[in-house]
Length: 194
Length: 194
DNA sequence: ACAGACATTGACTGATCGGTCAACTTAAAT
DNA sequence: ATTTAAGTTGACCGATCAGTCAATGTCTGT
Image 1 (cartoon, rainbow over the protein chains, first blue to last red):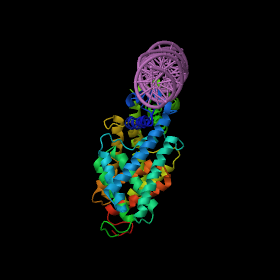
Image 2 (image 1 turned 60 degrees about the vertical axis):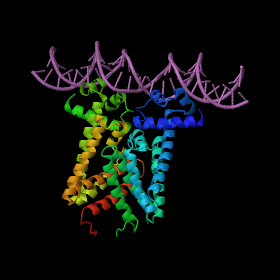
Image 3 (image 1 turned 120 degrees about the horizontal axis):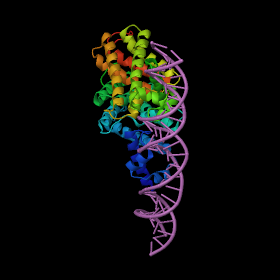
């Protein structure tokens, strides 16, 4: 399989697993839905779990790059970028096919912290926190890591509830919470007095 | 199967599904782990999904009752009860076997909003919001429902991240966020000036 | 002790599971 | 045109899947 075909496979597998679940989707079904035979899949992935890991890595890269670009496109000031994250999330929630977070799903189905799939999900979240802390630092937060994890909590809660409730309402509520957190953690900005 | 035996089955099934996942745990395995034969299980549940629904309903009742009692035990003032929720969550996170939220797992594996299992998970969250709004109203919030959903977002985010990261740190961060939300939404209290 | 209710056991059904194989087909490189 | 690489097809392996069945065992009530 050429590199581009392998990438296509992983991309398509990602979509199929995201929509159908990791355990519920078997390899016969996955082959049908991706258009790649099982033999070809096993030429490039030792096991189903290795393929799942590849989909998570791809999703991690795609999501973090997308979020970074959206946040930078929606705002230039670091402080405003942190808040803009929730506008970006609102966009995502509106997408057809939105069904929560790939990594939350992965950790739900692979519960053990030591499991590579679970660990990859945890790593994704840690990398997001690192990124948020970087922006928080630029924005002048006295505790960038603290702020980062607080925003991550709100982000994750919003995603989960967007899948279970009214997406736009949840996005708006999450943004309001983020505003409070940011105003509390970073002096100045938005015309509000602390 | 007597009522108490049926209840035992559902309780044990809940534990097995919570730890192992809904799709990953088959009925043969479930029978072994609960000590009830498949024939007996099917005497009382038309399908595996019906049993899963029964475990979710039991979990909903148990969790909401537990949370209500903990919040009431930890604080008497409604405002403080809202914050105490996060102390209760911190206790839960510390329990051996903690592996996120049964309903988030359910919605991760049963993605379609129309699916009964997904709908039951959504209903659980809605009932929690109703309860939080009730307390928020008693606490004097001008927008009890808004406050309720904001707290629910933080709660859900904390649960998900507690399964992926340092449990106690996440609980503390979530409580700090909740404090900000509550202080913003309810005048007075905690000696802080708005 | 006996009858009825309830549960277990092991086998069974047809289907699917992850993964492998041989034979064949298609694509790419030379 | 030929060779090599890569992929497809359909069958196959042993195991498991949800759900059912008949025979048997246990428990409960009289």
